[in-house]
Length: 410
Ligand SMILES: Cc1ncc(COP(=O)(O)O)c(C=O)c1O
Image 1 (cartoon, helix red, strand yellow):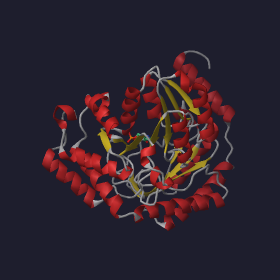
Image 2 (spheres, rainbow, N blue to C red):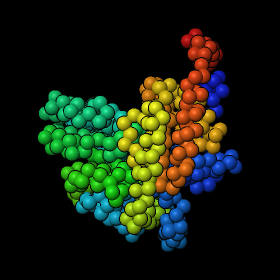
Image 3 (cartoon, rainbow, N blue to C red):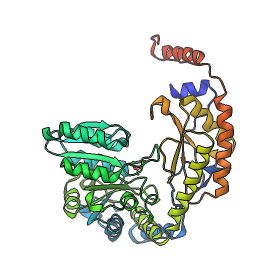
């Protein structure tokens, strides 16, 4: 129906666009170079020669797959090297890496809790956490985005009825670019004997003076968080997920989490790329500063222009809330026509009134690219906002389509 509506309104499908080279601050689509605000290549490492060379050397040494689960015969030195490097960055005792970020959340949450337990999470938490919670069979309740007092009320009301409780937040929210008050969440998890899990997918390489994530940003002791989760697909320009925490937790997951025990070990090239990316993150912290500067500039200019940027802190993600999916679709298309690639986020991914364009900044964007993008955004926003939409005609069209597909009237 979304596709049908877009076609009716003359909006091109913005999804599954083919990028013909390395997507960073710029990208090649249909043989045209666009300024790109749709990559997670936050600190500009994708295609870095040191990382590509490390991946190639790992292939030369171990081949393209380890072909078996690590307990059986898939263990390679590069796996432990990566896990120890991640544990050091997070200030934890140990770490385990798995083949996917999404599947890490599903298998770990799905396995650690069961129907006698309680999972309390932020209302805007990533889908992978919801899937893991559903798999676990635990009671799942959400609290208003970022609202630690609401989380406290839920735990206060429900905690004593369950054996274990897990409180899950993200360190830096992917849709809004805002951050939770981590010290308050730590304190309330303690008060209610809940495990605290923080998903660092968009925090590693982005938050904190060294880019080491949310603990670095707030200056808290990383060991006050029970479960640090992260992905390798964003700042670390690879593919996979991980859990960092106490050694007994990691040992347990390595022996018991089905997505680790019964799944192949990480491909050598993916592990080696992430090790090299971590090394560059440590060696070149100026990448994080540049990323934060560019995102801060984008946020400031968009705000000055009167755009609704929600609660973004301007670390790497800036949403521009249009309040309507049609407007978001039209605006993304107008930007694309003017040489800027940015994805619209439409209903049902977010509530209709929260439809938006979502800008991902990278350390490689130049100040000029940021200034030009916001200038064009303001021009196109005004134009699109004044364009009327014949919603009655659209509703009639969708009703007819529905009737032709189902043989029933809408
Ligand atoms: C918060 C969060 N957690 C987990 C994931 C899953 O990570 P991956 O895409 O590496 O599987 C994502 C992906 O975007 C995410 O935003």
